[in-house]
Figure (tube, rainbow, N blue to C red):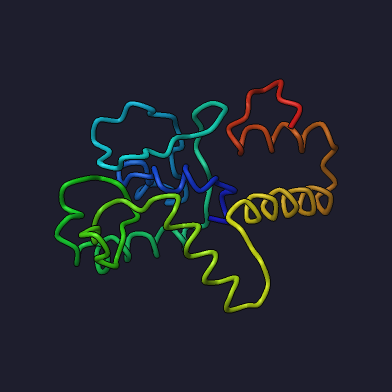
Length: 163
């Protein structure tokens, strides 16, 4: 999700209940749950580092997510048994409707890379998000320290992170 700068594991772990479908319609909660008993995946993805935070996205994207839940995700019977947002749509190994995995995301990026004849990877979106933040902050005349505080907060990093 290039609007939020999320890692692929964080995207895999988003639950419908983490999405703010009210008020400003523009936030997703990102947090760590390493022992999530509701997660049916063998290799459970988890938030890598940092602290819990709210990640902002455009309301138009939140509306597309809501549409996806109502009109696409709901087509898969297995999606009724969990709250994870993104589900497998192919029924390889009876996985249709189950939460997507990091491996599925890698597969999608490989397919896209092959179609473009240019190698892209999920973490590239995170880098692009950071690049855009720097550009927008510079255009607004924000100082470097304030921009880095914004970055640490948006990425869920610790306040004293030197990333």
